[in-house]
Image 1 (cartoon, rainbow, N blue to C red):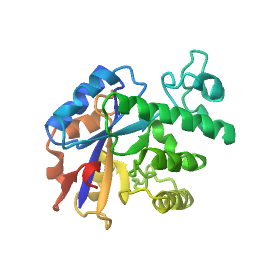
Image 2 (image 1 turned 30 degrees about the vertical axis):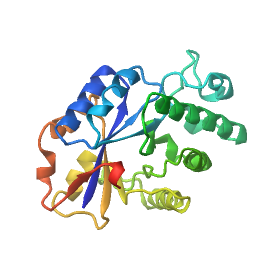
Image 3 (image 1 turned 120 degrees about the horizontal axis):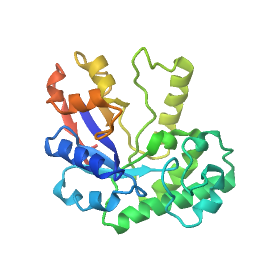
Image 4 (image 1 turned 135 degrees about the vertical axis):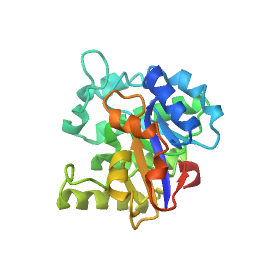
Length: 250
């Protein structure tokens, strides 16, 4: 079993940065994704050279903070609030037509290029609040892969406990989306879920799939239980051999 432990939201704040890098130092986190418009981005980037074996991807954003491209406030006005920031889940209610797809591609290109300019070599893609899994945005992801040769991506979540289970129809749609990512040239893990759910469901027996990505949010005040688990030697909870890898070695 090969497991990637990815910390979302690197660059969100100084406290989040500190928590993520602390987990990397302890080898319980192997990967992270950077918010190009996060308020603590540049201080995060300065630390990356300390972790050459870890992977650092792009946390594509359409839900929080100001956009990166100067034209996005106008071109993405339907998902921009009165402060000039992305308006939360507005993207999930907006009509995504060809004009919006082009504007999202432009914005996401700017986010990737900002990170590259700062010296980041992006290993993979995912998105803030999982907006990259909106099916209508698949053409944008494919265009990003072709332009930047970023060939690895987070799949739509496909492992849940009973309390969160979305139902067979939704799981079927997720399966189709994940298969489409691979069809269009992306390399992915087989299982994606959060750290606590994986431990709950798979501590005794591993999933049949050979690779998994576990999402974490170090430094977030809303995940106290997760922080407690990350604070310990959590891989010892697994009753079978498992190798922690990064997206670099996927």
